[in-house]
Image (cartoon, rainbow, N blue to C red; front, side, top):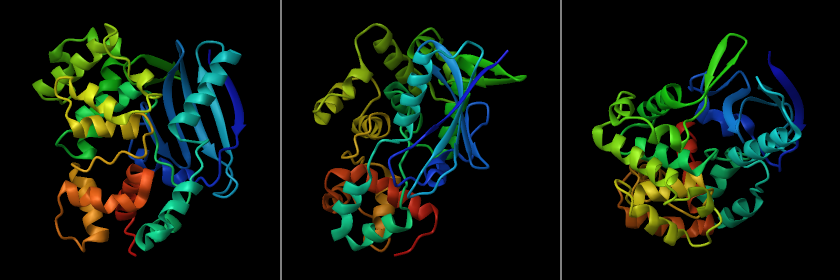
Length: 307
């Protein structure tokens, strides 16, 4: 028996939900994907697995999301509120893009790109741990291959929710990966070293030596990077990407990322290869929105936007 609740959310405008969800358009429907205008993902809300479906029924300037929750357990008031909070966090529904757009008005290139992509809110991972694992997986491989591995991790180690004869998988928690063997983690398509890095990070969390969620409120990103850098296999790039995608630190620019350097080169250097220092220098004009601006460039390139 499935318990179902449907309600609406009024996000902070502007929001282009299709642009925001584009990154999930090739996703596995039993893990997380966006298809025919609807996003779906199973999340662990408190201790309850909930299938969340979100459909945009408004406009960019007047956004409205219709949300449906499904679970095999009764959906309590606390579970419903936690689901709303988690969904709001993932899609930055309460985040006002206006200050960012105002900041980049003095940059003709970025200003035009934000006009083309108005309402794009880059998604955040539901937990900082997921952001860290994703960053480790994505070290030195393509995003497409990395997404496949991340889905395998969910299907292999994540908790399962069966709804209407379909089995969905949530992203695995730290305990599940701590309890797994390195060989099992490797079977998802990871190298021995990456399996070790993920297992070690999960172990640090389950043993209480690392609290990634608490880091979200730490006002010192450089301090967070130093802590993460002490973990095995976690260098500055992985730490910065974790802060950006897992903790909503929009001021962090992973300048060592080849893809980010490439898009900055494409739009600001006519395709001439650049170094990390060049990327950081260019990004200064975006103020405290450097990381968010980089994601706008990545999407602009993917959509073939020229300025």
